[in-house]
Image (tube, rainbow, N blue to C red; front, side):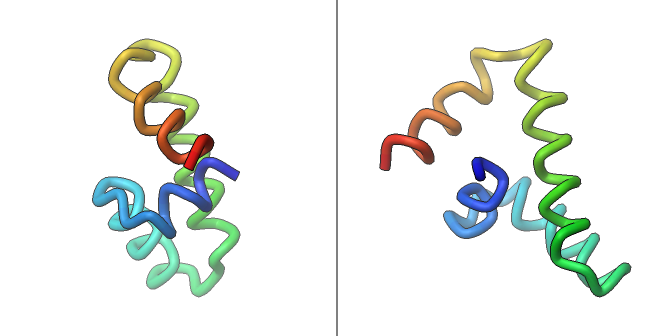
Amino acid sequence: MPALCAVRDDQPQFKDLFERVYQRTGKKMKGLCCCTEKIIGNGVPSGEKIRPIIQRLIWK
């Protein structure tokens, strides 16, 4: 769900990634999966950078 919230909330890095994948493949789920992978990938090594975004999206 955080990926869906990030795309709907117009977070630029996630919205751009979603749009690129959606235009290339025509499948929205692939775009959301890529955003999820990016959140997980960014969250592990640099948790301080992504944690405020996720907390803001979840506790909205």
